[in-house]
Image (cartoon, rainbow, N blue to C red):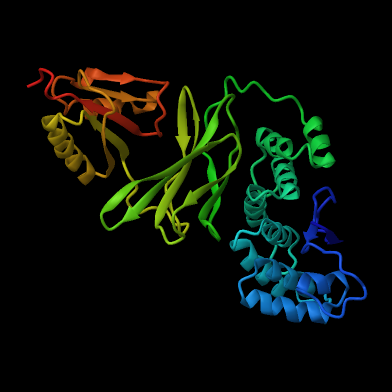
Length: 386
């Protein structure tokens, strides 16, 4: 997508891409008597006609038209420059999923033009734009992490974002190569990520939640795990999960109206550290879950199923998220398993209520895919247990 201008941020060293994206300029023959759309008028520098056409297209739902109008007002192409109005239009287009508009929102937060300077918000919107495929946003985000601007300095995350766009941006490739060798982090402690922001984007094919965070250190071989839970009148339940070595992730939602809470954890084989649960309004969850318990039982083992629902009902009253599932194969014996050493006590508490298992019966299963604070319970009540 072409660019037509550059902004210098107060105090900026000129190393970040403070450049605004504009709408795609389409070739249009000079002899044309009319324009098919605002883009075509813009290509011929007919700013007034572009404004008129884009206003109509924006009313019909075109997010590209919103970006184009923002560009006209930002650079004063149809009168005096109005960066505040431009920012509002960019933001509207960004929330509709347009990565180029999200980049412009980030740049304006970064530079303090059209909106007060807010480097935390700039880091968030660079993250959202990078998730949408904007290479310059990924580069700027890498620069933030490399310099500790807007986020805590983290060269591992800087390297991640530089590397994602190194093939398309020479500046990112050079920045990646210039980073010092990654430390082994063998003695580093896992630290809890700090959420930056979350936005739900209403896309043509549905909705998407994009989450961004920062972290002071990244342990070798660790990844970040994001968990979403649905919040409803009938309680809370797992909604979605995603993993990434980076500092932002996008998760599909069935609807932009789905109420949920989310958290992010840095996870490694030896353990995890999690953020607090936040609602989709950005507020701390008043009564966060105390853990996740998944019960499994054979389809024909009705006594096991009944016990699972009785135990699950009791645990749910104490704040645990409960999941019930029929096992794909027969279960020979009851068992309790957990993924991370930190969850041993929780797993032992659950096992204590299970006939034939007891406190010592909880087993560490590091190869299973579980969330932090999650325990799996397999019940085989009809296999000789009373």
